[in-house]
Image 1 (cartoon, rainbow, N blue to C red):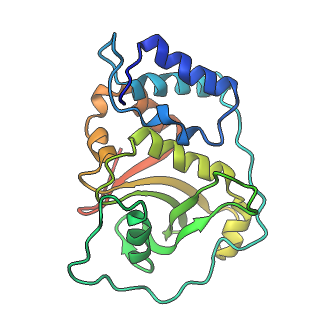
Image 2: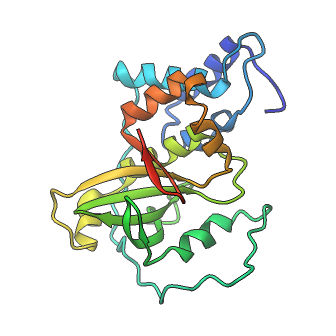
Length: 237
């Protein structure tokens, strides 16, 4: 971040957001993507924020995000899986790189995550649902559905905190019964949240430095979000 804040300044920022009930789009707030440390403490700003969010969750003050009732299918029809071309380049400046990468995985079998059933699945019902995002990937493995937030090649902007809050938000907004019905899965099927990190991304680097981010590590566990690495693939606890 260009402007640095004291530890108390960081706390004031996130507390104001919580007081304003900006939970639905909390992951989109600029402070969630702050990368540096507080100017008066040897603590990452994102970990200070994660600590405040964790406290809010544990004390029951983290307000619930409303489910978006959706009439349209979560399983839109897609064409055949597109084969990736040789020498295909992902431009760093393009904010659609992850969308293209997600599309290239359609129909693939991913270790731990299973078959990719769909990509870029919208959650909003009407245009007035401003700021509502899309689930990057929906996969099925051993009778478990995964909602996947993908952090693809060259993503140097999104912090791990943002990534975790983003997929957590999507699950709260999801009409779970309809999703399972659209994909012809039993109603008792578990739906898990996953952040899938590509090596070299900012979130990947932060994940491998979780020891210096204890609050974020605890928040990830409390929210029930799993972290997976794309190629070589493996689940990290």
